[in-house]
Image (cartoon, rainbow over all chains, first blue to last red; front, side, top):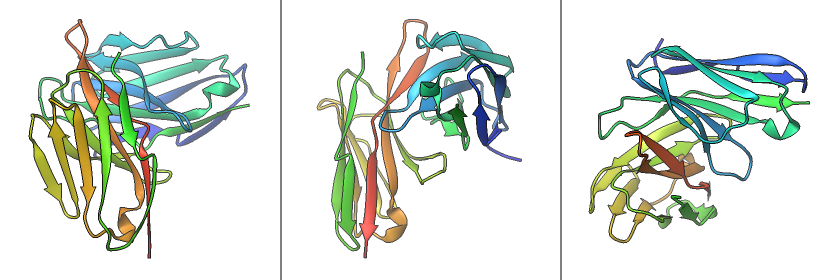
Length: 114
Length: 114
């Protein structure tokens, strides 16, 4: 399997649930990202991990909790979400240190909070 | 704060016609990406532009970068239906921690009609 794989593809959860999104990259990259894509808004960077250490946290609410156990895996733990958190959550990876390395995106998890 | 503006946001064009999508950004950057997103799909990297005056072409798409004007263009030549998608530009900015992040434009939704 190649590229960036995200599971699940679709998730419906209540506001009191706890769930996790999973991302796995098979590209040998050393940086991973979570982005949020909402309707009518630009893609928003949520978290960046470089060499398994978090280097960016763009003021994301604490109900989103990332975890990066190794350079190939990234999780986004969700709890007590709000309906406005419904969006497409995209994971991406890249090779830091290579000036021409674009982000490679997964297919995303479509999250609906009811 | 880096701002990235694309225009137009919506573009309906006839097959065989030419058109240009513009991407302006607000602060100095020397790295810019163009992505394509089909409905319900992830983002696919199209071009990486790394220096002033960079020009890259792939099929009917050509991208250029003018870092002095803080402007990138994506030119479409003789459009075909398969090019219908949403196109995003993304600009790199560097943080004090030595890492970088991408700021995306809102995207241009292109519809090519017969």
